[in-house]
Length: 251
Length: 303
Image (cartoon, rainbow over all chains, first blue to last red; front, side, top):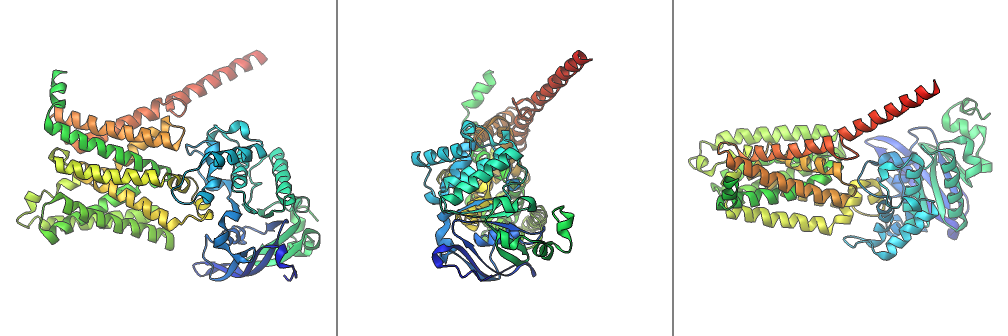
């Protein structure tokens, strides 16, 4: 796991992270660093602890051991630097709320307790919606959106946060091909403006096209590094079990 | 008609209707959040659990002061809401199971203590059993003040923490990722819920109180497109049920107020479920019927 990266190149560092639900370890002794202005896919089988890693990085789950630093500082101080994009299945899409209201929530972290979003926040939210091509849906109910549109709204909310690190939990789940292409363009834009992406991903077919780095995980880190070095049959088999690449139709 | 006008100018009616109307507003507002958080029955658990609090307060102090008895209910309610949150978060017991367990244990304890307390010489006078089914007709101006002050406290907190309650109800994990403490928000939410339940116990009773939370917000959901709209409408429906229920039960001397209020709230909910545009059953049946008819027409053309 030694990248020998300079401090200024590192966005997130995870040290000795072990997470357990009850006594069953979900993540075991994870040491990893995510480089600045790179996109990293976290890939692994179901139950490998991918979402758990993201949530532990956000401080939502208390680990048994370990620590997470953003820009060499403790994570909690850096909240507004981090945009979290949850799985879209995790919320109730029948909630009585408009698209703009959801995106405005991206500003709540900057506002703190009690203070309401103002004109500046609304402008940023509107800009974010334009960025994802959803400006015409501003006043729509979220229940009227398709799966792809839901995901774009989540991305707009993340943009409204003006964060520098994006932690995304399966943003490609349940979206159609054109939305997937649009999201990929947005990811590239995030990277080219110097920001960092860590993204839970499922589709091995697209890893090489979409991402700079790959982190293979199955409770432990199996392999991590530039996609062209890490993405090979041996590593995939070590992550998923024997001959899984052949099964996935990639061999 | 003349009877109704007379009723409205009757002081006792005015007091009771004011109390139940205010109560309806507060429970309508809070109910919106519990219904949207899919915790509709949390109110049921807390209200049942308040009974032993009332009886213990009576046994300890021997007083029939409503303030004292309701304070007991408040403590019991806070304890049980805290226990439910704790058990749900730190054990594998699911929310509904934890709720069912604490509801029945506390309510059972309340009933047992109640029959013990009945032997107490002041017990009948204290009218403890009114907390089971509620007795709005016993409302005095003092009691309305309790409802008004506690209700105002709840509404002010909802106004202040509006943004936090909104994001926390809609997407709790995202709220946490922004740095908002889930424990703190849970505590605020539980406090608001317990206070608004406690002020309704005297009028509606521990058994039916949760309907005051659920019915107006279910009705309001049918008609509204924003959280603010839903909260406002739910408050209006709650107030309507309170006043209407009081009116009906005053017009027919033998009808108990609490249950009639709940019936009114349920009728409003039923009408909304059936007839609201867009979400109502009638409208969606009509839409489906129309679509099917059009489809048949097209198939006939093709054939």
